[in-house]
Amino acid sequence: MNLTLPSPASPLKIGTRGSPLALAQAYETRQRLKDAFELPADAFEIVVIKTTGDNRAMIDADRPLKEIGNKGLFTKEIEEAMLCGDIDIAVHSTKDMPVAQPTGLLLDTYLPREDVRDAFISPRLGEIGSLPEGAVVGTSSLRRRAQILHRRPDLRVVEFRGNVQTRLKKLDEGLADCTFLAMAGLRRLKMEEIPATAISTDEMLPAIAQGAIGIERRQDDFRSAEMLQSIHCPQTAARLLAERNLLAGLDGSCETPIAGLAELDNGQIYLRGEVLRPDGSEVIADSVTGPTEDAADLGLELAQWLKKRAGAGFFDWFERE
View 1 (cartoon, helix red, strand yellow):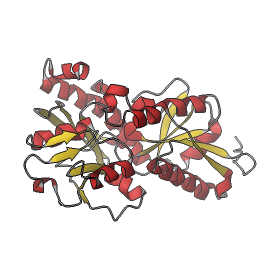
View 2: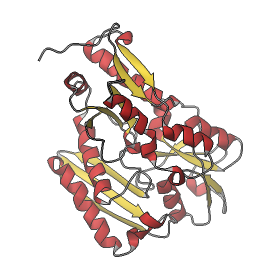
View 3: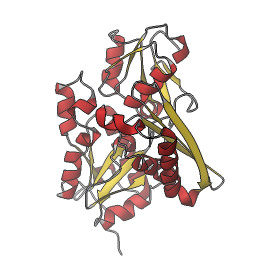
């Protein structure tokens, strides 16, 4: 098949949300495609799409995300635009993506993964251990909330939603003593001036697919499929296959306290996972190792181990919370 490349007269349209981080990820995708095919920047068009989630998040800024919907709210309009042909591909933070895509769409391209670690952010304190008793932690992540309360039940956690800049502004205003962000986001935004301390994954296991950019396309768009193959990272794909199958096997979503990380070493994949009660009172953790080609099965296997160890009733809070 002869590949018809995009041009300034007929650009490849890249859909994205409008936050600074979302745009940075779209620009990175454009740059990689531009370099791979030696195309000018105007052979691509960045299309910003405001989603239902963006609108509702602005109105309900102080309410937990689970009360206004789920993170699928931040992809619905983008995916609809792709299905009707208004955009060709969509760039996402993979950790925000539901496990299943709408009929006709595929999430099958991943860029090389960035730093997977969480960052501890505080203008006055250098690490979690330096937080005084009763300190206020700002986060909208159920995972981070559960993890920090498991370690430090004396802390008070408050809702802290918004993009990176919004959360840093809230921190500057003294609404919390600290917050957490993804190291990957800080690096992509080139925010080296932020007082951030990377947290070891042994101390705080990250969200499923944290640090990975995923690119979604129409299933029947063969031009996009061939172009995206040139920037696809198979190592990242293998890791995310294991992690996202772990999530699927737990019947979880990006709004449940589940953490997981797959790492590759000499043809082997090492997958760690944990599930937590939202109040941090209990954590169930385990790991599996196997050949990289078995990544999908390893994710499902670990999910079953975690369910077995948790026992009857542990997952009832998925419905209650």
